Structures are given as C-alpha cells and as structure tokens.
Length: 348
Image 1 (cartoon, rainbow, N blue to C red):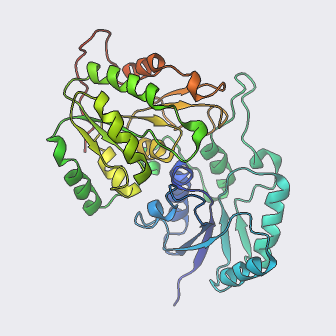
Image 2: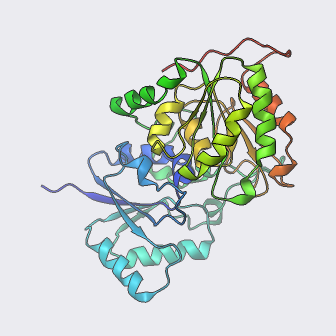
Image 3: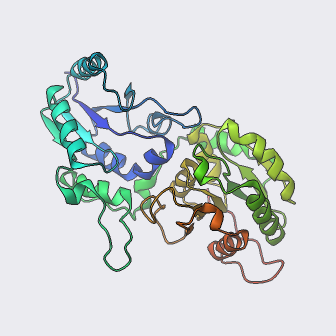
C-alpha cells in the first residue's frame, strides 16, 4: 500500500532552514512514515544555498517542488497547482516566515484549491502571524519560537533540547569533515565566515583584520577555518594574513552539511548574520556574531546562552573590533592578559 504524502511549505535558504530545524524534527516525529515533500523557492542568489542541501541528506525530506517567489503569472500558478495536485497529498504544513494576515489567508485559499484537505500551521490569527513582543525589553520573540507556536497541534516542542537542532550528520559526512581538517594537524581551531549575500551585513575587511589579529594573539597555536561560499574565498585569502597560526580555506569546497561536519570540531564560530552562523549554532559551537540594522534584535539570533551577539541598529559598522574581541573573550571564558590558556576543542 502506498504511503501517505505530506507537503511542507518553507521559503528561504540555508540560514532560514537551519533556524527552524526543530520544526522539521517535529514534523518527522509526527509523520515518520510519510513521504515528505518540501515546497520552496528557487534560490534568489547563486551564493544562497538551497534548503534541500540541509534537509534531504538529513532524512527530513524526500523530494522538492520549487517555484519562483512572487510569481503572479496565472499560467505559472496553474502549473504549480497541477504539480501539487499530482502529489496526491492531503496534508500541507505551513512553515513560512511571519507575514501579513492577508498573505496567509491568500495562501490558505490557494492551497485549498490545490486539493489539500488539512492545512496545519497557517497563522490565521494576529498572535500567530507575528512574533510576540516583550513589553519590558521591546524585543520580538525569535522566529523559531513563533513557528513552534504555530505547530502546537503537533505537540510540545522543546527548543532548548539539543537533539532538536541535530543536523543528523551521517558517519560518512563526519569522516569527510575530519579529512578536511587534516591540514591543521590536529590543532584546535576557530571557524569564521566573513562574506554574505547582503551588503548591509558586511562588517568590512578592516574590522575583520583588526579582530583576527587580536584573537590570534590571544590564542596562539589555534587554527582558523574559513567557511562560506566560493565567492568568499578571495577575501579569506586576504584575511588569512592577519592570523599567526595555521589557516584553512574551505569556502566553496564544502557543502553546507560538510561545513557542519567540520565545524562540529571547532572551539568557536565568529561571523555575521548569515547561514553559517545558524549552521555553527546547530552544531553546538558557541558563536560570536555582529548584527546591524538589517533585522530587528533577537528575532534571528541563534538560541542559547553560550552565544554572544552584538546587534547595533545604527548599522553593523557601528560595532568595533574591540567590542567583538571582548565578546570572543567572554564566549570562551578567557581571562584578561596577553596569553590566556587555550580552550579545549569541542568534543566529537
């Protein structure tokens, strides 16, 4: 007998996907025997890693249906409707970023026309469509917290449970990650990402150079592993000169899951508001990240007390290398002084 098919509607790329990884774990638990199909967007940038690069090999999904975001052509929408109806799926799980109630109702109507009898997670109330705001601090709840509330019919979801952030790396992926790190000769290392597809998130080479110089002096003998897209490699080559220990450029040489397999061995991740940041957090690394005015505070911050997030709504360039260095020192619990003891690398 053919197994049931469910469709998961989630837009975005690497960071958006990893940021809601607990929701995918919850869906797998709720529908363990179903054929799970991801409905997602065609990547809007060559730099942006598609969602399935994380989800498929982790066993979260079995296949993908893609479409162009913002598509309004009636023929294209009719073709998408036919493709969805051909799946013979009764259930669709709505897992998109918070949008207007009108957009959510419009999507609900479209998916009903596609033949879905059960729509789960569609935020048709204001409290679900938008993140709750803390009256004391003014901060908006994390997006993953809002999504977990939308999926409440599937059962309670503990976002503090590390198992819910697991990438489900295979033994083969972990072994390949270990091989990629062999040039470091077993040295403990810091993982870093300095690129990104959004220019307003770019902290600038001068700031990165100043920070890496300070961190390198504080952690003699540590390696530095650059993580990112192929387009980040040129900058990595220039910044490597600021590091006194061994460096390894893995930009564009690893898949997102391969990057996770490498970073699971690291002592710390340093970066900006990006997919690799969320990937590192899911692998259990403490993270130091610089955020500017591209996103509101907290909404897209990785979850966990070990992270040190510098978020300045004046813009990312308002954050100084000294501030970032103090965040690194705090994240690693390094005492003051020019040569603090090195932290132990993360356990396998």
